[in-house]
Length: 96
Length: 232
Image (cartoon, rainbow over all chains, first blue to last red; front, side, top):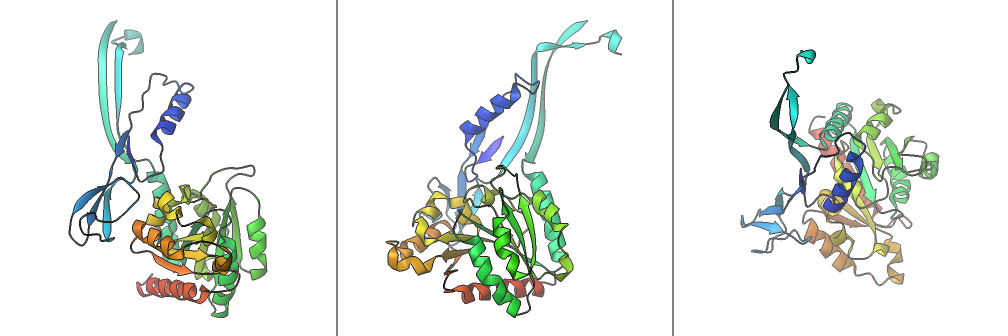
């Protein structure tokens, strides 16, 4: 799951809650992998692309406030990986 | 019986808020169909959302503009009761009687619309739940987002709650009548807002004295006329 830094999501809290919920869900071995997405912006004046790590939406190159946020917003579920290394029963004639 | 190792990767790339955004777009389609301008009003608790509406709506009514309010609260109907004398349509959207969500969701707004006669409304105000964090995350179908910040809250709030100030189109600086009693630096406050959102329109107001309210009304009317001229 990708989490934009601009969103009010605290990764530690989300992981804590996920681990609390999964114990009663039948998916006790499930793991949540979070990837924080940095805030990147493009200056509309000088076209400088830069990262925002402080709450300051100003171009570090030219000082313009006309900046467009390119990434760092949204919570995106990228993929689900089912990894059954314990083995899966197949070919049981009673199920066919 | 035989055992087999299985590793399956299912790519999804789905926005977790997709369902919420679908409902919001449905709300927006309904608003556009009826030509209703919709404002999502947000602030901390006690910044003056209801007081600003109490001051604003009678002035709009004098200009034959019909207003309605969706009143979001975690609990209680106190804000709705304050707006009752205005003789407008009000829908109370409590999230839970003993403490629920900290923001209004698009599904709650959708539910509230069933209780409104949409054909007679020009401007709908959605008074969100008092909170500078979560309400900023959720699109409800509104045309514009407005944040009310009272000058008693300090110059640092835009920096502490950047998403709210990044998302909003207009900031009303309320309680300007308290200026003589506070040590607030309003220029610094405005500059902090501009550091987060260069394009933010900022209007100092006082819901108590009426200072700045006419400028806010002008802004609202400009948004209404712009919406109508787009042919919605």
